[in-house]
Length: 193
Image 1 (cartoon, rainbow, N blue to C red):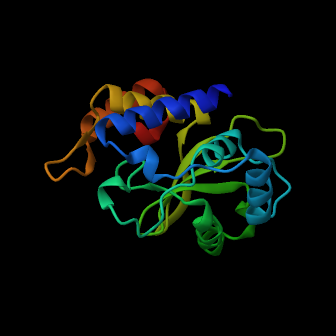
Image 2 (tube, rainbow, N blue to C red; image 1 turned 90 degrees about the vertical axis):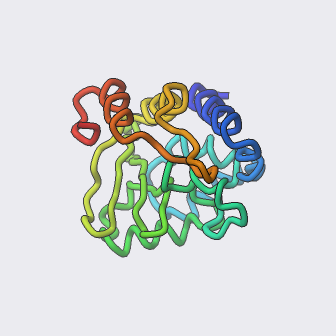
């Protein structure tokens, strides 16, 4: 397993500690060759599929939009990990807003308003930056320089109690702490300020 895969596993273990059954709710994933084939079919692009995306869908399937137990929906507060079977639909929604020139941005997380967290991949670029995309302000706002920083940040959010369960058992977060921890781990990125 790659370093990205190890970090993703650590993140899932932390999710399961606070919300038992979360990892199981994500399904079992698919063999790597099958994941690669499906992703290349979905994204129809010449750019490389980011390692994070491959690792995720080799390990889990994601969360369906209408998951039965809403307490297990969020990957991060407000955003679900897009289920592999819904990924093409979410990608087409993104392309409809930004145009086909942005095919190097892949949606990874989504909310009910068609906002997403995307990973970027361009040929020859192994960094795979992570950006926020809001449907009503169609721009990509940099959140993390690479997938490793993304995973280290969300892991820290669990470890440092930025993420917590609200009284009803739903994933919530402390906005002020999120900004402080996010800025510390993603130095110089204005999203966290």
